[in-house]
Structure formats: C-alpha cells, structure tokens
Amino acid sequence: MSLDDVDDEEQPRRKRKGRPFFTRKRVLLMLAIVVIFAAGAILQHYYIEPLYGETVTDKYTRCLQQNAVLDERFVDCDNSKRACEYQLEQC
Image (cartoon, rainbow, N blue to C red):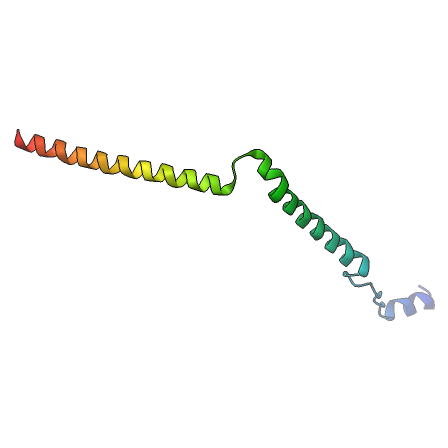
C-alpha cells in the first residue's frame, strides 16, 4: 500500500451534481403527449363515434324502453302467480 492509496480511501466521495428530472424538454414532451391524447379523445368522441350509428342518447332511450317493457312483464307475471295461487287455494 502506498501513501496515495491511503489518501484516496480517507477522502469522502463527492456526490455528483445531477440534473433534475423535470427538465424543460421532458416537461414539454409530457405536455405534448397529454395534448395528443386529449385531441385523440375529442376526435374519437365527435367524429368517429357518430359514424358507428347509435349515439349514447339513443342507447339510453332504448334501455329505458326495454326497462319499461320488462317492468310490465314482471307485474303481469306477479299477477298471474297470485291468480294461480288463488285458484289452487279454491281447489
């Protein structure tokens, strides 16, 4: 071991001064990605989805109509069940 080796071991290591994570380029890149995704979502919602045909309002209206029909059938079924039970009791 030489004297130079001892001096190197005794000196504390210097921390390298690193650049921060959020540099101007990275912030602009992340902002550009967000803007591109937002533009894609707007494009899809207003231009591509209407080409498929049925809109959300149409689907909601159809769902409400189906719900009303099923409610009527349930009431009819429940009334029929009660009528059948009444007739069985009469026998």
